[in-house]
Image (cartoon, rainbow, N blue to C red; front, side):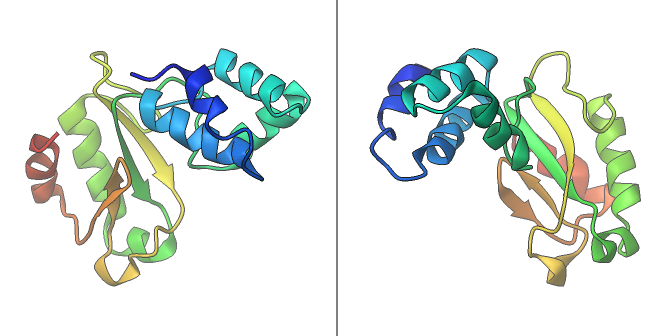
Length: 147
């Protein structure tokens, strides 16, 4: 695993590089630890409050520790109408956690998200950014088995 300071250093010369650095850190660590946000503020010469602002503004960035596999389910109207609530119930039952929580083994986190642009295949979940469309409660176990 790369050190967050090494990751930040790769982006300091890039305009808007703090966002790219945060993406890279989160890809490596699954979230943005407080010390990484502070280090980024120093490296990019911005106030810590501004770095936190970036880290918390974008819904795909998380300052809260998350599981290795982040499962996000779309909560937009098309997915809701197509049965997202039943898929949420199946995910919660299969993993033994509620939305917004992480499994005790640190393997999975469940989160809601806005539209992921896959409305032709609702309801949609993503796992680590990979979309799964036309999800039904019966498909949940098979999808999770791959992780």
